[in-house]
Length: 192
View: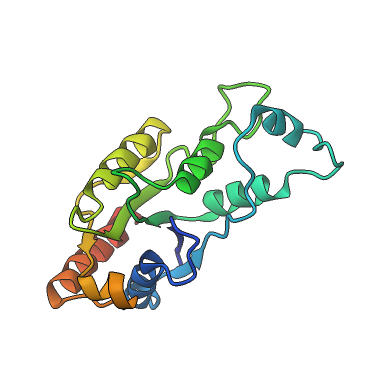
C-alpha cells in the first residue's frame, strides 16, 4: 500500500487545517497508508547545527529530529500539506521545515541529493476570504525551487465561515467536499 505523508502547517490543537486533513484522510484511508509528520521538535535552521548534524551538537546528542523528518519524507510516496495563511504567506514553521529539507543530506558536497528532491507533493489550505491563495502560491514557488514535484492543479483553498472563527466550528459545504475529493482523486493518480 502506498504511503501519503500529511504535513499540517499549524501546531494549534484545534487547527482547522488538521481538521481538513482528517477529512482527506477519511477519503483516502482505504487506498493509502496515511501518516502525519510530527516536526515540533525540529530546531530552527542553522548552519552550525547542520554541520554538527554530521557529527554531534554542543550537548553531545545527534540532531535526531532532522534525520527522522528527512527519513519520513524519503519513505513517503506522496506528501500533502494542509496550511493556514499568515499575512498573505505560509507559516514560519513550514519555512523552517522546508529549509531543512532543501539541504543536502551530506553537507560535505552540495551536489548531494536532498530528502525533498523529486518528491510528489500537493497543498491545500483552510483560512479566510482569500482561501489561502497567496499562501499556496508562495509555497508552491518554494516547493518548486527546492525541486519537489508539485501538483498545482487542482489545489483547494477553503474559506471558513464566521462560525469557525467565532465558535471554533469546522464545517465543509457540499461544494467544498466535492473540491477536496477531486484534489484527493487527482493526487492519488499523480503519485501512481
